[in-house]
Length: 423
Image (cartoon, rainbow, N blue to C red):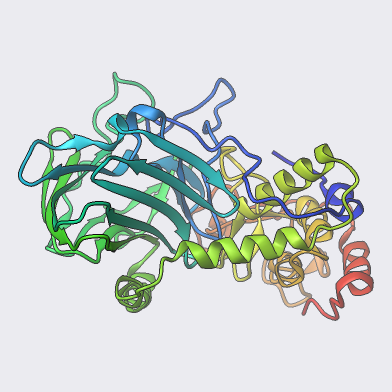
């Protein structure tokens, strides 16, 4: 959706709140989990310009996270119904799904939290983003007894089996590479202009800090991983799971170095996300009303969720009109100026990049296709260039432009947050 949120973000200021103002719960059953308008349903958490996001599950799937929703270059598809559904067995007993335990599930600013408690142990699970390509699940298990606690752990995941309906054939048909530390899906190359685009080395991977034995069921498109650990009396153990989507091998190789560091960290990752989002919320001060407070936070969450980091032909961070609307996973001139205006005071660097992302493709008098349009800022920049520019994308548009609001937003930015240059 396209929103002009400037007046909300800039005119109201207030004490910071900590809870998400978006409904983050969803249950995707299809890759194209579309509503009647042909757009993806639900509001996954995306952060830091990530190209994948997650939903909180419905209660029956507690202990997991729904998705991921992956932006395959230009189109968002749900790769899985859920991943990392945790079940626990004590002292060799039967596995118990966390959804059967007393629980609290909440969507906070920048992260998710799920808490479960028994007389024997407690489990706190958090999901947050740590980079433009990776998210982390922190799982803290605490022994509430006065004797060692022997636990068997089982994680399960279910990929979406169908494209748009149960009458479709399976769409993924890929068997992951499995090791004691990770599960890695490498997608076959797809260049379907209006439905799905990805390189032959695009990957989604799950890496854990604890060794496990994993099995993938090709017929059901599901996985199961098992492991075990012993927790000393009145102690706790932190398990780390990193989930990454990368567009190509270069991105994957670069991210692997970071993944190793996150898996070896002794601190939960969500704390940085919590601090970062509270800092953002604190910039919105001077409370006028509770409703204004909620609306401003919701607006900021929407903008950040639509933030895509540089990839493909997109050279700078940009805010897209919508990560769930089918045709809008690109950067648009009309929208970008208003997004930059809204973010100038709260996230000035992102606001600057949002303008740069459009000016990266300003037409010059040396242009081989349209030198007569020198100076024009094109309408829409996507991951892939148009065929005329040597790409195979269908959403790139330089046939027209939008009203000249760029100078307006840069002037505003200089006054508010010292945006000096967009070149």
